Length: 177
Length: 111
Image (cartoon, rainbow over all chains, first blue to last red; front, side, top):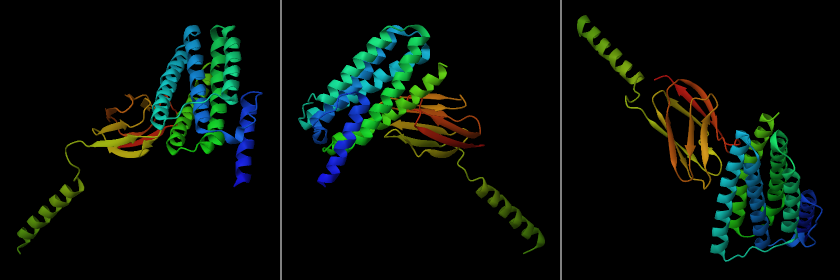
């Protein structure tokens, strides 16, 4: 059993390396409050990215996708907050959440310099990449590490929703070619 | 039984058999599909022209039931239902525009 936990820890490190250069030193001990914080952060990042897209893009496909992202990620976060309240769990900041936020800020600054079709393409491509990363993290690390069954179940539903977003983002990328 | 009576009975039997073969209720049916955990359940259904398909979205996110052939696009708000009356026979594949990983299929038979 401790061997298995080490493997899970290693998977977390790989995930963190994929997301950004930061590697949580206590990855193997990701707790439910930390997992909740990471999931909430990942959702909020995508909402901010969509808000940026709505400010900058005139493409109906891109704008429609961004509106879908705001609606779904807001719904997931509301569900998560309600669950955390019920479970008396307070989300806890951690190295992975901070790495996610830092990476997202860099991406936002990069996108801010673009406009027109160049922005549309970069935003859509980043949405594919971002959902791939988050989905991998959910499947390989966050879901297996979650202890509370209700939190685990919500993360599982979240994964299915975000897999849908990943495919949707791929369609948007294809439509912009 | 006289030959005449026999033929009457035979005719009656033929009528009965015909009625049994066409035993579909005259009234159109409503076929219900549950939308839950990002899936249409059941994913494949069979209906007749004139029937109604009703989707009940039990998820907390919005979905759509969108025909690939463009025949209909039904919005399914969270915890709400949406429906469509089937007008043309054929096989129609449909999906959710917001989550294209959700797929369904309706085989529509003539009335």
